[in-house]
Length: 431
Image (cartoon, rainbow, N blue to C red):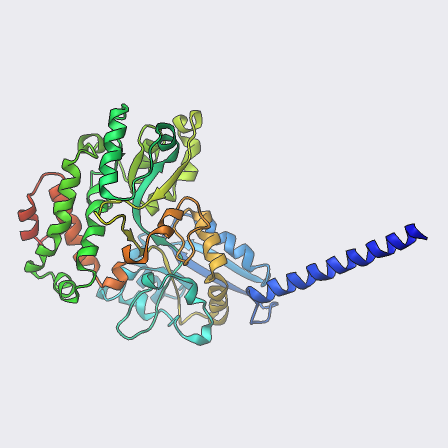
């Protein structure tokens, strides 16, 4: 009788736990994405972009098909994307969803990519825009939202955490700490405590040094931003604090420009040089970091002596690191899509913390969501105080103004110009 009673009680407990588990699963399902259309619908959705491949997005296609098994989602690459997307959107085979960029907004040659875009701020669409950091969402004159970030980007430094641990040093969080730790590494025999790409102005170590400081200078000065965007020659003076700090950084011996000039490009070569294992800190962008995982197996040095690494903001300011927060890749929905309802349904599925974080993790880029702690590589950026976060989207700087700053910083960094000459040339720099 005792055995029978025990078996009976055990059965009741098992059934109770199963029921509890079922209720938890239902609650989780209710809290997540729930289809709003007929799940038996058959249709095709095309997403267009400039990537050669987009495995991270295709993984999201597979997840979406768990809800809508008869929807065929395809990613297609368009060659010379920036110049061709307008023509493609005007054609007969226009995509349903397409990659867009903030810098295209307001430029006549890219107007078609804006004109074809649905207003994603419409509450009826049900997109969870609150999960995205507001400072990287495009600000438009009419308050519409033609695109929404699916990846973000920033500037910083790859950190060889194993080297810091081996030498008993801490990753710097202020400018003086940066100078001191570079000196400490030199004393320990490291020829290049910091390195970075320096052969072109785009994402060169000079840009990565000066741009965050430049944003800090003009962040709360609408008059400065207006002059800079108008390419007013007098606005060049706003670059002086950033350029002076950059020169100080170079003079403090943290980097050897000659050694940096040996790095052939700001992606593959930067990563493989860092994987040699003798560079404690390497300047780069989040785009570069996205390629690290795939290149671990291509580096004989890393295979022989693997190490842990993270990506951290560069503490170039006296007040500490600046998190320069920028959108990277953004999606627009073609308002003329023949499958507009399903295109919007996929966007509603994708624009959530869970899916955006999944895609960012798979792609290796920075997530646009408010929580960066899920990815240990980028977690340091989540610790930067809000007062130290700078966003060109919020500040209002145009790509034309930023280009002038980058050219000036490159000229000063390479020694081709003095600070005064660089400032005087603001508004005259061309490709």
